[in-house]
Amino acid sequence: MGETAQAGSEELVLGFLAEAGDEFVSGEAISDKLGLSRAAVWKHVNALRGQGYRIDAIPARGYRLVEIPDRLTPLELRPLLATHDLGQALHCFEEVASTSDVAKQLAEDGAAHGEVVIAERQTAGRGRRGRAWASPAGKNLYLSVVLRPELPPQRAPELTLVASVALCDAVRQAGVEAGIKWPNDLLAGGRKLAGILTELAAEPDTVHWVVLGIGVNLNVRAEDFPEELRGEATSLAIERGQPAPRALFTAALLARLEEWLDRHAAEGFGPVRLAWKERSATLGREVRVEVEGREVTGVAEDLDETGALLVRCGKRLARVTSGDVQLLRAR
Ligand code: BTN
Picture 1 (cartoon, rainbow, N blue to C red):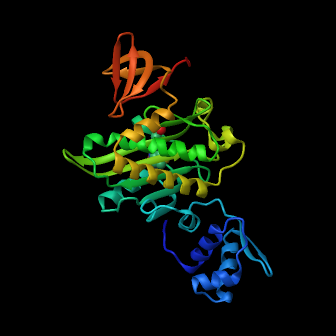
Picture 2: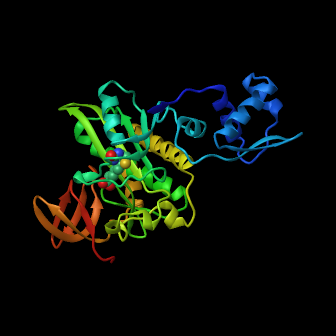
Picture 3: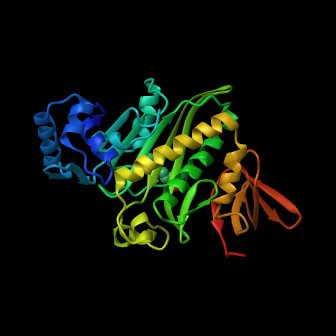
């Protein structure tokens, strides 16, 4: 069953404590600010403790939030969200086949721009080009967001690059020096840490909706990966040597994504292109790609103003608009 967001008093108390960070806040300040009695504040603090929150209470100093449970539900996420659209409607599930399937159905049924679907586990997680996306329970982030961009359909692929820049920023903010492999794979130490699946419904001149499906390996350990992925995949926890608080990461990702979507809407693809190039793990590398059914090897030279990858093969410059890029040796 899904859990949808609704701000109650308990959530407001949690939000107040979360905002104070490491500081104590007095019971009086909370009750004044939220219009609750001191007894009601105490009751909500105890209810939150019962749900796994660690909250210190010290006479004459007040309350302090020490630890939040590692769950992705509206209760954990809402107080952390700093967005105006993304995640304002949150649909959180224990298990779904694919969050992108749920988001696509919501989009077809009229979901608003920014509605977000999150699951603790996917039974049929999908990757690009028909591949499966390993989705074990309770360790990673599986998130899909419905967008209703005002863009002509031919510019929709830009959104994939917008999302990869935002994802890269969120991962770097969490302390891992990630880079982007064209078009939107996030790599750390040469291994894949996150991926984006973009799906859309459009008519020749209108985009009805776009669903960005984002999978981030947060707290899986090397031994949790299927054997065949161990050399190719990594996680935030493996790279930085300590687990990542999933709710904090999710809130940071939605904030970065909204910033970059807003910038793209206001200023066009130019700044996104520059940002993508700065974060690229592809440019300057020798790559192998398929172009028009032919395998091409050359040096990835640039990202053009439509988001295509330009690969230099001798005198020829191949323009890659879809497919997989294989990174060969560094130059
Ligand atoms: C890729 O790199 O191949 C893209 C992977 C995208 C995985 C995410 S997880 C959330 C959303 N739901 C899915 O079924 N897929 C995307």
